[in-house]
Length: 397
Image (cartoon, rainbow, N blue to C red; front, side):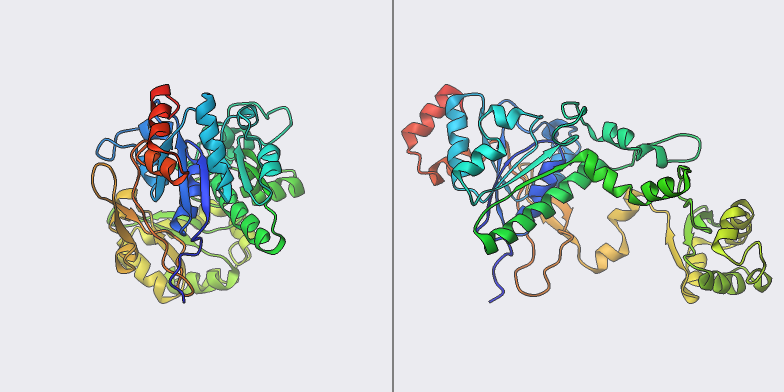
């Protein structure tokens, strides 16, 4: 017992590209599902060519596509569409993020395929969801961050900014992942699949929940605050004597009392009406931040963090991505693994879901070359060699 991947026996057919859907299917693959990635014969998933940073491979593609099998199909070719139909007939999940309406025009809309295969789970990821005036608009991550207002609350006060990661794509991908898992669980009880839909727009709007409630309740839009926080003070990065920056966050007035007394050496500020409460400190944020910055500037980052740790005050270094590569927490917990790719092994992080009992650990399977598994998958479908050769000759695969 306990030797089987959590999603062993689950087959996912993923007609996907870019980030959102590939992220969802990669997490399913990490947990043991068989993910068959359907790509165009003329170049495949365009994320393969976003850059050539990883020894000639796209960094997005390497991140999002390990553990999958790649099959090339021209879905506009009748023979290619017929192959996809055979794949769907043997799948547990059909995941797609094609442009709006394309899946239905190709004959693989959710209602149509589920009518043929009632146990199938369909997961559709779109930009703005089904219906509404924005349904057919292009929905790149940056555009959705702007349309939802995420960019308006990101960055320093002077100018809006998109997040440093594709947050809208990631949000939609994670909801697609969790929706697929919920539908598979429900199928175990009911025997029937389900149709799951999520969109970059809806997922990002959900992630703006705090700002939505704040603005609706007060009539005031939360301002951009950089690393700070519109409703909490102190909550920001502060300079240290060695040129680094340390983030300090005080969550309640009890913490402030400890911080003011033991770190700032100002016990008089514990009960002072301009400093004692978070509401007061937000109102006087510039004075609060100036006082703290003057203190941290006399200490190194290590000294600052050590003193804050001693009084149980939350802090963090303002690290770069380069710092993350050697972060002691990742090293100590052995979070790095080598992942095979067409150009050799690449260091990658282990899946963030740890199975500590009741199954084997999530895997970090190879990154596939374009169409690497086409013949093997077609043979799994029972296609004889002659038929595979005809499909190739016709340009259908």
